[in-house]
Image 1 (tube, rainbow, N blue to C red):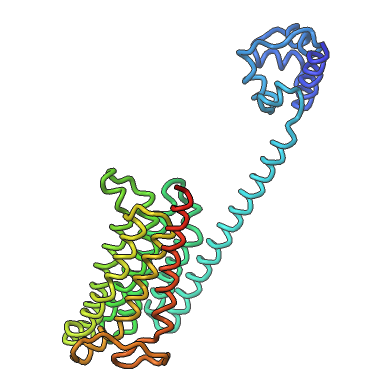
Image 2 (cartoon, rainbow, N blue to C red; image 1 turned 45 degrees about the vertical axis):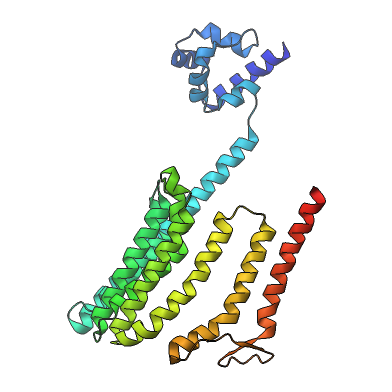
Length: 338
């Protein structure tokens, strides 16, 4: 009985807050005034089919109607959400006004001084880059990350092209484009592939796809840079061979961590041993490529200064020892678990 009375008092309170008489309230619900009176006196409950209309008319939630009390926590959440929305709108319009004022000022100054539009396009494309990072995400409802990333990349490329055209000289835009494409692939391609649905046989090799694309774009960047500089001979005889020698380290590390079914200690040990061998051999390999001298295994030296045919014993031995320790620890753990 007390629940019915509390329910009735809550209905009467919310009806008065909404400035409705019992008759007006009843007419909106298509029930009799007597039915509303019984609810408010705690004699009966409204039919379940009109619960939602009651909530809509009184401006309350169904949860509040059921518990016959204001949901203060929900109201607090709604107020906080509204405050956050207002802050976002204020932030959005702040940037709109700032960008608009900056563009208008630069447009007027450029026309007033040079009687034509020249460096204004640098400002325009620069603001376009900033817009993709600060304002564009607020305008999107779906695929925010991918659309923002693609827009940022496109506007950045356009900015570089406009800059190259404005300053003149060598057409360095191609080199800048190749470098930016490689950088974007290294940083963002893993996240892009993570959100892209791929067939199951391919989806298991996303890491391989990433490093494959990175390798191709790295080689492409080197080719573009050296051709741009007119040093094709150095590219063929030195830069490309050194790059090809260094790349297997990244590929083998990927294979160890992605495809070898072993515990972390085993993979760590193999990676450290690989690093030790790489450190031991790399100087001699590079000297062989650069100076066309015969390859020979370097001698271990205590000197930290790199020189032909030598390798620092401490730098080589530390990862080797740590790698062997990792393998021994894993072997010990497995023997104890048997």
